[in-house]
Image 1: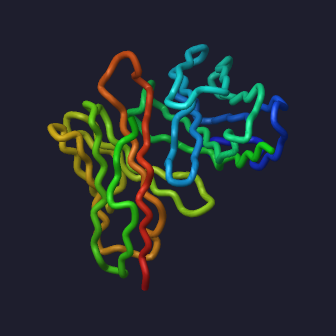
Image 2 (image 1 turned 30 degrees about the vertical axis):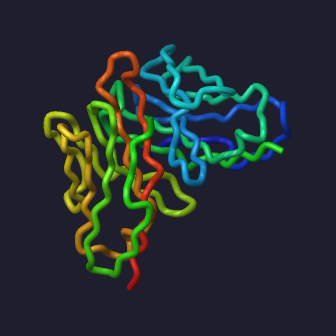
Length: 114
Length: 113
């Protein structure tokens, strides 16, 4: 089944404890992206990747890191999480090299930073 | 800058029509529309590209006014399953941020029996 998977789905952590949220797609997609969703603000792009080893900042990259070493994986790293990073996170992928095609979203990761 | 969606919310009865608008202050290459049900991931509805190409479901219609950088999503003869939050996403015509996708704050749609 074609899908985007994220792990973990739920995470409660404490301020400053490094964490990684994994994202994997099995559709051989070029484009992958991370978003955070907060009430009243919609989806805000954190980072995106047009291809392996190519990543770029979205609108809210501060406090986050990403890497794209393989085509299928695009992990999101929070090296020192803070309470303002409590949010719902979505990973997405697309077959095109840019935002000109369908974005397939993962199921989401709900992160709480205490 | 995020695109601006209107209205913020709309309540419909089954069978009624509604229009959701999305506008940007920047020149756009593409406009995306997604629907999100509570507790679920956004699901693709439609993409409109500069030049008139459209990709999406046959039962969903939308328009893209390239001169005004505005898009509208038309919910016709609404069904209960249309309930959810609708988001537009926009990609700008720029080479230095090609790949960036910005979403509006969303429009909550409630369809009642």
